[in-house]
Image 1 (cartoon, rainbow, N blue to C red):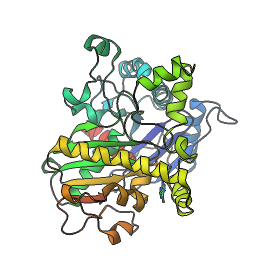
Image 2: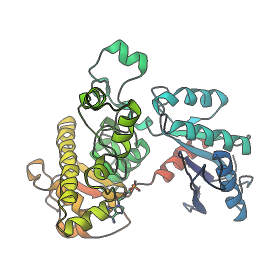
Image 3: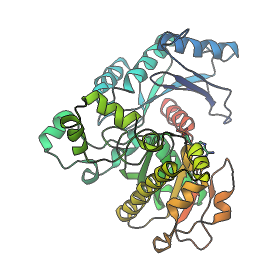
Image 4: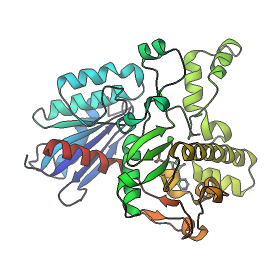
Length: 381
Ligand code: AMP
């Protein structure tokens, strides 16, 4: 292999995000997003990928450039089949297609992105990096739901977890921030973006996470409910007369912060709270309450917690959420420093007091870098 560059592709249902990273010098020569696939000029994923290729070529960084070592694809669901970054072959594409029923919203676009990229550069190594992979170390006691085992196994119903690339990166970066080896550190990672998930990482290995069979379970999110009594679904169906698809849309798109107060953006919620808006305040309180429950639960799961790391859009940018989530946890050894918490910075930093037994950190996530590193490591091995 000659090149040192990796093109990272994140093919979503209506957009393709790309970033070109140079692993030799850490630079990022290109990045962009092609949006609104299916509307207007970008008819489908093939057209979107073609546009990505054209944009790169226009900057002299085309897919045919000799510096390009590999393409790394983000794939949402790896099931129990994929627990590592995987070199893509026809057989691997087939296996990812078989997982579509587990991730009907995400895997189809991922597969299309892979197919088109392979048709554009059939000779180039391409690697799939799975959002579920980091969670494959979760023990059975945490991964299994307490339902009939045969039914669960037949239909693949278990906890897979998502945002794994981010949890992997952030837990490692947190250990680095503390100047310790990942193997020595127990961390609770709170990935709070539009989607949100928590994980408990013991010595670099994930032992529990809040998302489950799908990204719907766990924390309150921008538009997703997170945890809810599953019997609410039967109730909405039998008594409310809603169809399965309607309930799916309710819980994934019309719930969470948006369902509670009409806004899914924490900035807007903060502004409304400042004006005394009670719906926004209640949405914030429910969001924070759920987060605190998970911090408490994961403290018990880990036994000893060395660090709590906040990441993603809300985690990195909302001092109010961090303060409210960590307030009054002195008995857990958690003490946030108000001044440090309020500071803005793009780099990883501690926001706990000197006396705090548990380090509280803000660690900007970097899923593109993690995908590129895993891809490059695999193809240069
Ligand atoms: P992500 O999915 O990681 O891109 O996060 C997106 C979310 O981050 C948005 O929906 C906002 O709720 C939140 N966010 C972004 N910037 C800020 C900010 N300055 N303060 C509070 N929340 C923010």
